[in-house]
Amino acid sequence: MKFSVDPWDPSYGTAAEFPDESTVSVELDTEVAEDDWAPITPQVAATGQLSVVDGVRRVEARVWVERSDGATPGVCASWAAGSVRCGDGLAELGETEVGRTF
Image 1 (cartoon, rainbow, N blue to C red):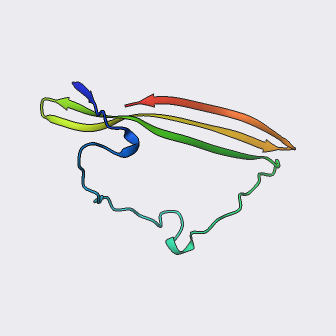
Image 2: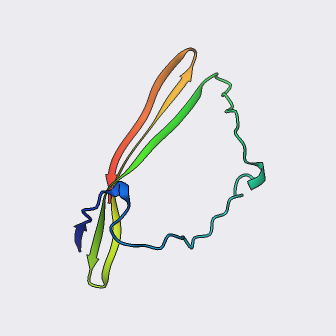
């Protein structure tokens, strides 16, 4: 297997042309009916604590994976996620995870 890095800046998309429209069907009402979507107020646990989880992902580079049957586009990406627990006037940093993959 051979990898080739696309020299194009990932924030501008890819240097190759791909179809703009996806053919994937999306089910919008799996958890809540589409018409009922609205902001919600989080429920604070009986302990008076609230945990917030957030993260970020980023495409570092676009690559081509070359095999005997042809080339396939791919990405090299990084991510980070963590949590904060709030309660009793204090905020405590929870677990964090940082990683890279291709």
